[in-house]
Length: 443
Ligand code: COA
Image: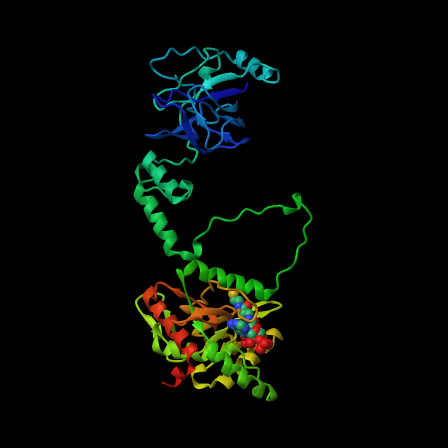
């Protein structure tokens, strides 16, 4: 006979929320094992199973609101397995029918196959079990806990666990008989935070997109997989802030174009990038906290006295960041040659391993492609990165009239743990001023 387990008398509470379902269809539960957890405004309560049995069907879902008498689940009762689990009186205050004779029980089992109406039983409320039917069978209910692993925790602890997203089953209780205490939740969270490799993020569900239309699977190159991991790591670990500014590079562009044609004859392509590297080095020398890394214990900033600039290069295989070493010791033409060589090696997959290491600051220049602004992701363990968008000719008011000027948009993302916003504004303004008048480099 299937037993219908109903929501018991839960005091004055009504419309109580189901916050956890502790069993699933097909699972065998012992008598008195917790089936679901309900939570009212004031308390949460576990509803125990009135009998040993197999869960035939769960009728509620997490988030449902239930009232006394609502159908919780259906159980196919199973005989008790241990000695000492003899039928117990449901409550001292309620008359208990005599146990049914064995012959009657056998008949009941035979009749299970027939379409006999299910027995309705209210699950045990905190202090008693209440039978909705006085039919035989009720007396076969044992309230004794059969020792199934259960979570023992009070409402406040359960609430705290939910707030922290902690699964109570994972927490070792240190209270009486393994009861989980608030301190146990706190210690569990502290342990997880200290062991960062153990941390998990809420995952984005895997979707079968073919349900909605045709799809194609494209393998991601190894480089893209590696850079995806690095970018994700930086994004998660570093509190990024991006500061924006603009440099008036009208004079610089005029100079660059003059030089470009001569240098082109020598096979050197002079783009704004070489000047950006030069100006960045000067800015890093003036603001050394941007040419740094944070010590893992957060007690020191490691200021680097060398200036190796990472250059983000777009390749067919994905983003690669070769490192232009000792940029402070090189002139603009050498910087132009070196950056072009590194970009070419990156695209031809000829970069030596050494050329991928030791950067102190990175430049991501998308200006050759376009865009007005973007927020570059810091290349950890560096603490800052410069993003460069496309220069445009804009009307600029000079106090008397609007004049056409070439304006270069700049974005500086920085690690807010190492750098304050005011420092970032000053650093980027200084960099823009250097680009506006490269004579500052020799000051
Ligand atoms: N504004 C306007 N024009 C610009 C410019 C800017 N900020 N930067 C470059 N240009 C121009 C160049 O002068 C060149 O013009 P020209 O051929 O008329 O002389 C053209 O754009 C193309 O330049 P490019 O070949 O890209 O050279 P570069 O030295 O500027 O850049 C790399 C070299 C390696 C940085 C670049 O090729 C690259 O890969 N950029 C992408 C970086 C990236 O993907 N970053 C994203 C990280 S999230």
